[in-house]
Image: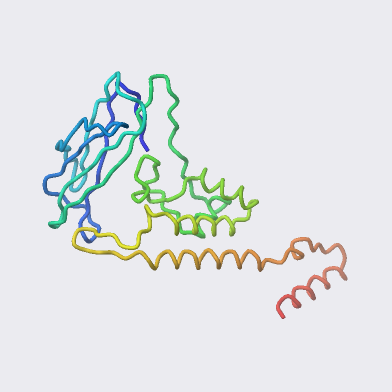
Length: 235
């Protein structure tokens, strides 16, 4: 969510798409802004077209504007379908601390990178916490994945399972049905699939033998015993 110190300008952006998921110019695009008390300060203004389907609206927040969570409501018509979307932004007082953007990295040499690999959250092309969640190329920030790893005592597969479970319960990413233009998309089956993947990762983690991690061959007999143990685990 974007933040702006009152007395300054904030630029908000919307992306319109048709039923195929391609960006498309809407008919009569609009932008309306409401303060924390739900008072309409801008009603059905015309945003600026930046390129096909991409529109921006710049708004100057007054010096005495109330701090808190504001919202901009985007409107328009695509493929004869009326669309509406709400985006929130934060107005803060002068001298306030504004959180910096989250970190997004992908490297298989790190636990964070391994989690991204297991859950296929590897696209770093559009990774900004300022973008709506459903428009980011990567869902989780490094900080969020690191938190899941911490909760799972560093177990990469358990953390990956937790990430998949989190996605499966996020209504912003997965809804039963969503109308995009003239097309109705059903995401209901995606939730079940993600939960099955999570269970599979947990099973894989549980199948890793704890004793194998502690087997050290200091002598030839010990090495032979390790080989025997390995064969017994296959039975």
